[in-house]
Image: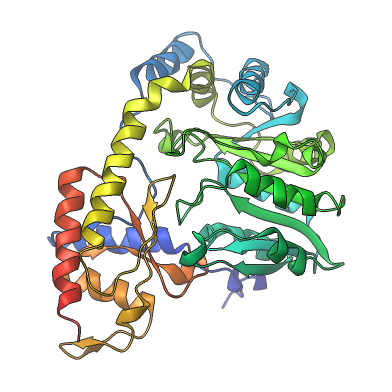
Length: 397
């Protein structure tokens, strides 16, 4: 029998994709499953972006693309960084990839050697730890709780840094918690990071525009850490372009060059038509997203209102993205019809069976006391799902 690599054996399957797969299988069996497991907007890609893609095809942008992306796209991203984030990234500091996930993998593979430590605040996006494992780095997790809105402090960060620390990875707004770091909170982290100029920071800002605080703060805006920060973004979330597959980084020139080299051997340039469409998104005023963002905020409030009527469910108020991450640990040890809940995964499987609602265990995101609920669905669907969950939880005793 062919032996697979140890690299593969060390890697976990994506929990979000696994639950999505199970949900599809159950739906195929005729079960009325409501899946709130994937982080995918239910909105359609805006028409002006689709039209730009059509024009790209008509203009025969159908050949191989430059590895780092078309020049005019990278110039548009450079203007976007300046306009939206007050960040100065030249075209040569920008690399376009097939999704923010590839962007992150490129940076990790460019910077991390075996046994290098990578600090990751938890809860974290499921792929961070697994990408570090592939690079043979050592994930060092800092735990944050619902009582601190799932955000770490400067003191926690400094205490986690060792001589082996090479990288820090985090997101704001955060997947899975929806937490948003404020300007002052980021400044306090920057003041710690600047003491260690050899440390690279991946700041994942893919949910930048889905933000209910009124403003988004980027870590790279602080001059004392600008040369250490790689800003990751893309078009999947705010622009409802998940299937188009495009992410990008703004980075110190040497890291951008390294990512260009790695990507040149793995995938080469991103889809030509997607790039033409993304130019339209980057040139657009983000004000066009206001109705979508308002809808997400209303959905968040709807989900929280129903969750807060459920005894034993503990919530905070996430300020961005489209997730709620409630603490459900009070149900551990409870049972119904011979099923005992000992973990968050047990609870997710129980809710899938009993309520026909697919959610994702917090264990996959580094918090064993929580579950992730994606509210990227219609208000009608969310109301139905939350009421099913409420009835199912009430049966546990």
